[in-house]
Length: 270
Image 1: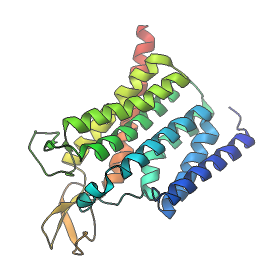
Image 2: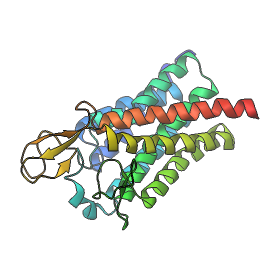
Image 3: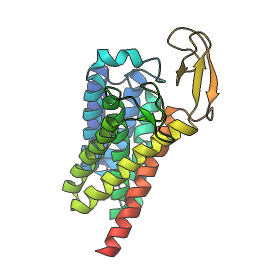
C-alpha cells in the first residue's frame, strides 16, 4: 500500500494539535506531548481517519476521566508509579501496539489488522476507565488471583465497578470501530479483546509486575526509586523490569491478539 505524503502530513498536524491541547490541559507532560505526536502521526498518517478517530476517543475519554474527582484520587498518588500527566513512556505504552499494527497495515491492509488495532485500543481504554473509576468504588478491591481484599489502588486489585467500567471503556472504542468498519462483529470482538486485555493487565499486576516497598513508611507502591514521602523504595515482589508501562503495552498486545483471533473465528463461522 503506497504511502500518501499529504496524509502523513495531515496526520502529524492533527496529532500535534491534540498533543498541544493535552499539554495545555495538563493531561500530557512535555515528553508525553512529544510521544502523543509520534503515536498520533503514525496512526493517523498510516492507518487513516477511522484509526485516528479511535485514538481521539481514547485520548479524550481517558483525559476526562483522569480529571474526574481528581481531588479524591490525590490520596492514592503514593500507590501509582506516576501522576496524572502522561509522559513519553506512558504514551508509547498505550499507543505502541497501535503504531506497530498501523505499520503492518501499510504492508497488508486487511480486516484482521483493523480488528487487532481495535482490540489494542479497546484494551488500553478499558484499563484506563477501570483504573480511573474503579478507585472511586465504595467496595473494597480484591486480588484478581485469589479474591483477597487489598487496599484501594493495589496492582491486581479489582472491583465490580472497575470491571464494569473496563467493559464500558472497551465497548466505547469497539463500538466506534464497528460503526467505522466491521459492524457488530467488530464491536463484539473488540469489546471482548479489550476487556480480556484489561483483565490480563490486572493478572500481571497481581503476580509479576514490579512492586516496591517504602523504607520510610512501609507502604507498597509502584514508585521507584523514591516514594511520595521522600524515602527510597526497594523491590518487594515481581520482576524489576516489568513496570506499569510494560504491563500496559503487553496487555494491549493481548487485546489485539484476542480480537484478531475472535475475528478470524467469527468469519469462519458466519
